[in-house]
Amino acid sequence: MATPAPPPTDNAGRADGAPRSGPVVHLRGAVALLGRFPALAGVDLDVAPRRIVLLRGPNGAGKTTLLRALAGLVSFTAGEATVLGVDLRADRRAVRSRVGLLAHGAGLYDELTVADNVRFWTRAAHADAADAEAAMGRLGLDGRLRDVVVGRLSTGQRRRASFACLVARRPELWLLDEPHAGLDRDGRDVVDAIVREASAAGATVVLSSHELDRSIALSDEIVTLAGGAVVATGVDDVG
Amino acid sequence: MWADAWLVAVKDLRIEFRSRVALNQVLPFALLVLVLFAFALDPDRGLLEKATPGLYWVAVLFSALLALGRSFSVESADGVRDALRLSGLPPVALWLGKVLSVAIQLLVLEVVLGAGIIVLYGTSVTGWPLLLMTIVVATVAIATAGTLYGVVAAGLRVRETLLPLLVLPVLAPVLIGSTRAFEAALGGTPSEGWPWVGLMSVFAAVYVVAGALGFGPLMEET
Image 1 (cartoon, chains in turn blue, green):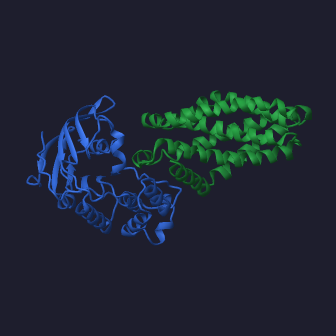
Image 2 (image 1 turned 60 degrees about the vertical axis):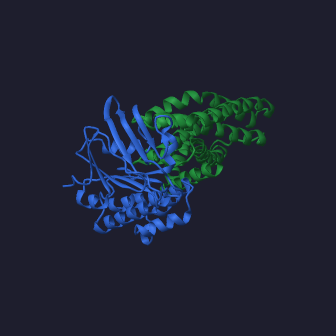
Image 3 (image 1 turned 90 degrees about the horizontal axis):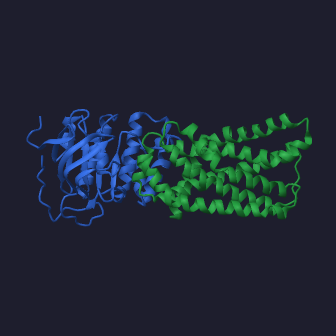
């Protein structure tokens, strides 16, 4: 099912401030296999710059696979797949440094402190070291927690640390898989505020969440997946 | 690229410093191997002296397996591997960083083991330049080849048991070359050891190129 793309606007921009025309994500009949199983079975999706798009659907609908495929971690084997102007079927690695994926796994080194982790991933992305400090501060990791070894953190604190790594990198496309999972109310509020700010600054956000009320309020557009395909889009079918 | 490689190396060394696995497990393991060999061969002191170069490098190789396994096990936890793929770090920098980290750990280990064979086995050195060059070249060879095969095993559940099966046969030429060179440096004729250093240099050069070219695709596929 095709998703109508909002028309590109003059103020649509990238995280680095440069204007971007055309959709950030463009999929037509995109297929991705996990082994022999078609986890994505012909996805049609367009995401315009600066939009916040919620992916929803039952377990196994393909939300996580779609986010990983958009990040260039899973191959599209058929159809058209373009992210940030990069043809993922030709070279999916080329897009990786421009997207940020908050995955189920924390992506943190348990033996290092929060500050060590956030600094490492920030420097690896050649981002500004000051952004690492700012991100930790924003996520409430700037006090005693910054020097705590990640292996000793609670689930929610690990989630905050993972999110701080993504925030500090300032990606152009944010891919958030269950960003509210494990967080307390304050943490969820902070995540929502940061996502809105990122979108306002020019980034595009695609997220999946089972916390529908909060996520729907956060999103500009809702895409419903089932059986590895888009079955509904828009904001009118929220319920 | 070098800055990225150094970033990865410092990160790995910091993890080792914080976890103290190398200090509390790998180093005692290597020293234990030397002590056990000393007990086993002590009745025949002459045999122990002859076997010292081989025992030293066997202890280094076994310890290197632990260090290599450790180097990749920290990357397999909780989504770190995906984060590395998304980080923007060039694969060659990642490989070089891990080689640097393993090599630095091995050099420290080799110095301690060197002191160990002097104290435990009463070994005397007649060719310091050859000895030092052997250590440097063999370390580079072990770290480069080991890191390349380490990434092959890293994505598999059986990595702990697969890594020795992959790495030990490949490193057999290094074991032979370093042992022969050490024999020449420890009481032998040093000039006879340099061809073995040359052989190991070729081995190391081959794996530097292979690692630089192959690490990225291997990391992608495993």
